[in-house]
Length: 127
Image (cartoon, rainbow, N blue to C red; front, side, top):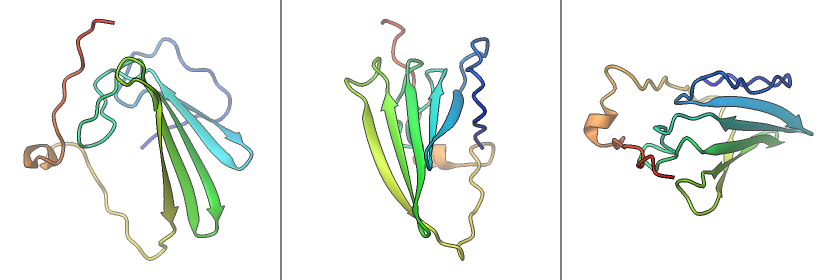
């Protein structure tokens, strides 16, 4: 899960970098905006293995466009790894009769061994 304070508290400068980083959110009208920084440099963008460095900054937005749909945008700005920021946009459809199954990235999960998740090493520390 992802804990996102929305009460205006500042980023904790004393936290060590982590896999999920440190996120802060705020409302811009009817859109939730979440900014994540302080990543550890080992986090991947996706299960294919696209990297991001410790310099990465992620901005996500969540907006309910109508009763049955929500829009999610994800912008990655990582000048150490990519030449320019890039954004993806997804539209999610409400499916009230669908059961959500747990996905656990831990012991007993064979996705890495099956090739669904690629191992990755961070780039050299050269700036």
